[in-house]
Length: 77
Length: 147
Image (cartoon, rainbow over all chains, first blue to last red):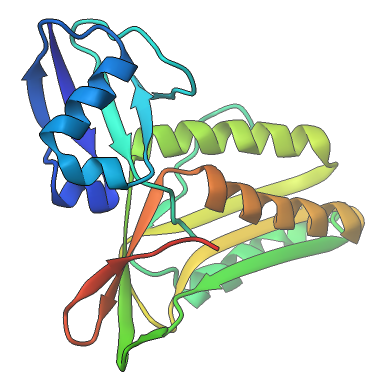
């Protein structure tokens, strides 16, 4: 399946928005492990994942064509 | 009042003090109001190793931020007897000394307006996917962290 990755804040400085193909990943825990292997800088940062515009708290199933946002801690205001 | 429509809170660049004055003036016809509470966030010229913050550049996950703000708005309206609630947040570059956040609540008596305003500021700083990049005078930058 293919998914869209979008990134924000300091994470956008080393992971650009991209469409990626995943063959053996089906949930967000697996995706996190994959991303942290591919982008080692990510593993030293606190981040949140939003799956199709829902911030996820627990491991969730990723569907084909999902948009996954990788977000560092918020700092608005 | 359209409490149920998703409103845009984002303003390009800094929030003009004249806009704030006009927003206050618009409430003169709402004569059931007895108290307003306003919070204004201003970009602070922080110093880091001799370098000063020149501006903050804000970016957001717009869709998610507006949906989340909509939920917060509904919850605050449920919790407090408010007549009005207005929230504006900057996107893009805001120079130090300029206004980047404007939260404005009104009620018949002061307490709900004050409490709702304060709770709104806390919640939107913690819950809205917005990021501030502090740009220094020497063109370096660091990502803002909320305390």
